[in-house]
Length: 239
Image (cartoon, rainbow, N blue to C red; front, side):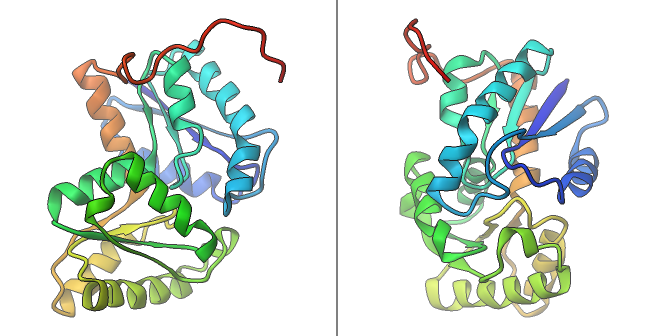
């Protein structure tokens, strides 16, 4: 199968690591394609950023289906453009935020998300509400590190670990979700550190979760329901 990963940002600083991570996670018969936006925000840290990314994301998602891809992933935890793309595509469209929350909710009675900045807390809560999982969301915490600075892994892991411990002890989270797809390659280390400290809880990587869900849906030969995601009415639309 072929899965297209669309980074809904113009920055290319994550490209190499994104390709490496997705190819590592992918099944042997899965081909990964990746692209950035041509126009839009450098990163997504607000509703404004998300709105700016949508037109080009949708254009690239439509192009991916025309190129023969079997599924599309919007590689941002806020799941920008996912629901709109589901209306116009006939292949599964996956959001890492929704996917990782679904996995977390299947493993624990409650979960917390640890993300980048306070600006995105309401966006993440909206993802949980739309997925019907807000009743299991214990909290959304943040590390005060902008998206474009998360490549400092030592600083990132230290900050994430501290907030995860607080989420467990203060918010009663039984599972933890990394709340940014830029948090690459740290889930296993954090899970082991928490286990060593006496907290045996799952830590969900949103990129990994989104790919696993995409592969499962393609293998099952199912896609989004047309009763939920109806094809938009035919009309003139000026972009």
